[in-house]
Length: 195
Image (cartoon, rainbow, N blue to C red; front, top):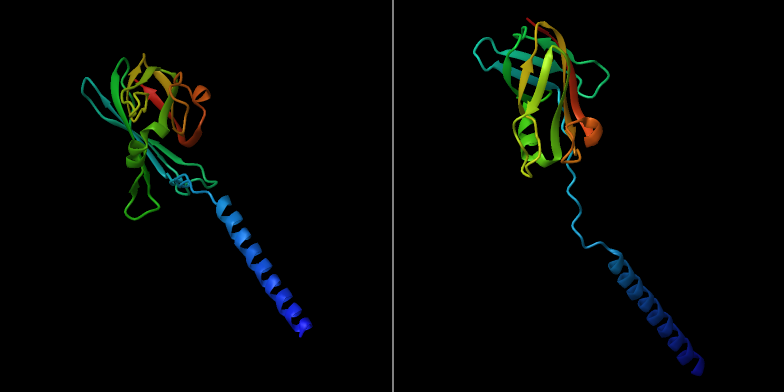
């Protein structure tokens, strides 16, 4: 009888020990969990098309520069089109839009850039017969955004205009991608003629 009580007692002690270990493991696991809300992840959108519209301030023909990349980030180079020549010694009001034409209907990515304006900035670089490009619009923190801009042309000649959309640049910056950092969402270099 003593042996039976001892076996029951040992069995009960094993059960208590097992339950204690399980309770301790549960407490440890619960204390290791992160109660902070996870940071929201923004999935990068596919941009197939960038359209730059240049309207002369003194009247005349609006010029459209378009970059269409049918495979988004794929290996194919984008198709670049320029609808006409710029006028020498003129100022143009410019605007830029972005879309994803792999969707039907095409998705307007410009809306996302506007909504997340503190996380985006457009940069302009130019050569040749373009004198200056300067941003007109600002983000919610008062820093450059660049969806709208002015462009001044010089005397007749050839020129290039590079437009780049950068995600999470350092702001404020000196107006160059090198100073801003971040990652380039879309870029295109257009060859234009100034007459």
